[in-house]
Length: 193
Image (cartoon, rainbow, N blue to C red; front, side):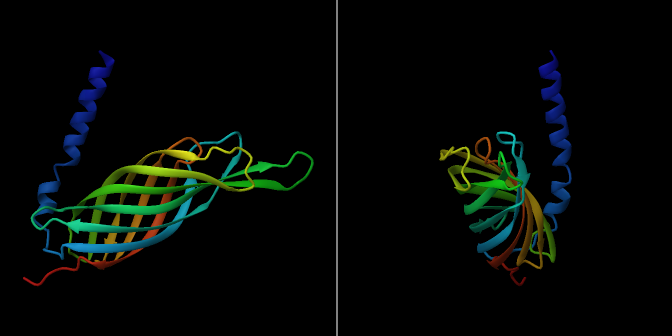
C-alpha cells in the first residue's frame, strides 16, 4: 500500500517537472548538429570507504554529441576519468595514506536542453555505460575491477561554448563521486534563420 502511494507521488511530481517543457520548447533555436566538448573539474567521493576521510579529487573528460534538429535533445558518447580520494591515518605517525580510487567511464549520454541556442541554456540528463575502476597512490584497500556506470547531470551552457556541469558518477562502493566541471564546446553553434 505504501509503495504504491510513493510510486504515485513520484509519478505526479515527475509530471509537474515536465510541465514547463512546452514553454521552453518554443524558445529553441536551430543549432549545428554536432558538437565536441573537453572538460575538467573537481570531484568529491559519495559515502565513506573503509573508515577513511573523503577529499577533493580531479575529473577530466571529453564528449561528442549529436543535436536533434526538431527536438531539444542531444545524445552522444562520453569518456571521462574521475577520482574518489580517501585518506587513512598511519598507525604510529601523524602522516596519512592517500588512496585515489579512479574510474575511467565510457558511456552513452543524453540531455534535454532548455532554451538551446540562446546565450544561457539549461540542460539535464544522464548516461549509462561501463566503468574501469583502479586504485592509485597509497593503496590500502585494493578493489580494482570493472562495473556498470550511471551518470546523472545538470548544468548551464553559456554563449553556446562554455558548459558548467554538476554530475554524479555511480559505479561501485568507494568509487562513486559527485563532480563540478567546466567544459569548452566546439560546434553546435546557433544557425542563422
